[in-house]
Picture 1 (cartoon, helix red, strand yellow):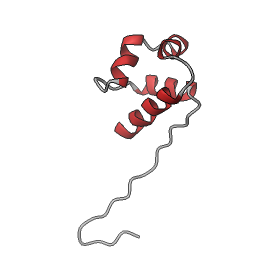
Picture 2 (tube, helix red, strand yellow):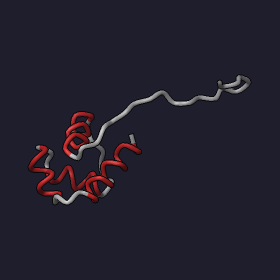
Picture 3 (tube, one colour):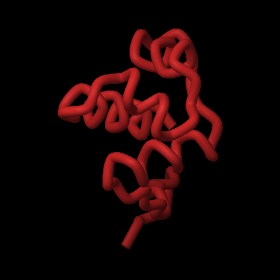
Picture 4 (cartoon, helix red, strand yellow):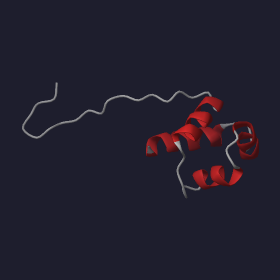
Amino acid sequence: MSQLLKDLRQAIDASPKSRYRIAMDTGISEPQLSKLMSRQCGLSIESAELLAEYLDLEIVLKPRRRVRKGRKSW
């Protein structure tokens, strides 16, 4: 989930809205948002979804590419 959190942090930094406004509008506490931005903690899936929706982002899940030893990956 680290790439997701990195993308959310970047979107928050790029947002014209203050962190206080983002916290108030999403219902995510200001201390939690501050800890996210300083990499002190992560987020629940629900909070990540709230932030993504608020910041007009889409969370996309896709299968990872796995290469097994002795087998070719097509």
